[in-house]
Image (tube, rainbow, N blue to C red):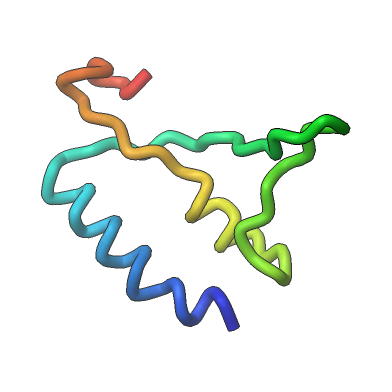
Length: 69
């Protein structure tokens, strides 16, 4: 299952972001196609937790302010 395989990678990424004091922000990723721009899928099953985990940006508080926006 993809969520089991991605767990170590996401954990490492979260630990690194925490060490750098980066803030997370949800991000919308859409397909670049000629037709409708539908949302990208990060998992085969559509597992909401996996989709939300991968649809994140990590922002520097110095660059984007305290709120990260």
